[in-house]
Amino acid sequence: MRVVRLSESLFALKFKNETKQSHRLEPVLTSKMQNMNQEFQNLLKHLQQPSSKLEIRSLGGAVAHYIATLPLPYPTTVAASAIASPRWNDSNVTFLLTAFRQAVHTKRTILNAEPGSFLSPTRSSKFKQWVRGVYDGLNTRNVTLRGAALGGLLLGLEDVKEEFDAGVMGSRVEDEVVVAFAELFDAPNTGNDWEQEFRPTTKSTSG
Image 1 (spheres, rainbow, N blue to C red):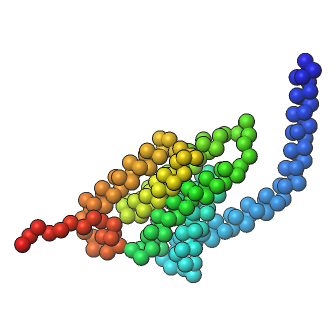
Image 2 (image 1 turned 30 degrees about the vertical axis):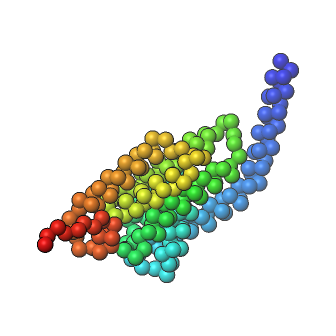
Image 3 (image 1 turned 90 degrees about the vertical axis):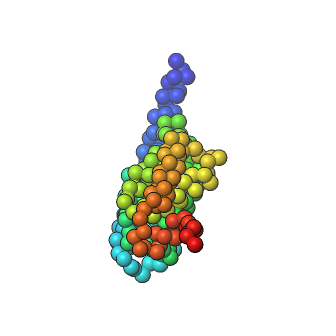
């Protein structure tokens, strides 16, 4: 009984201290979220424009950063906005692939830095939920962009699989990559050179 009462007292003291600390941190966190929200809105504006002052390498880096750092469901929004952007073409679509691959690495770093808690979801569970959120945003009719984004996500998952297993979602992403590139191979020639770049070439047998 003494042990139970002691545990209750310690829990009450811990809760009281954490409550005080949360009140002290609240203005700081609010200000930080406001700044992040403004930066996030700026990113969406850049993605919606055919051209902007933000160079494509920086745009890809920003996409990777916000996909990895924002809480769900915002990664879904960023992913969807990224592949819907008119900024991508044959000369820079590899930056889209790199962005999604880098997002996985950044997410791994963030999760590894989080303190463990008995009451909170495990890091593995958080990672799987995050992968699902990103995947849900990659729904577009543009086969090239979908293949590039999914390909980058898959490469990232392969890079970190020793630490984080995406489980069923990893298999689903892999299947979608296969489907995307199969569609790209079977698609008729639309005259877009940058789509042709991702299409396997075949040699003519005619003499």
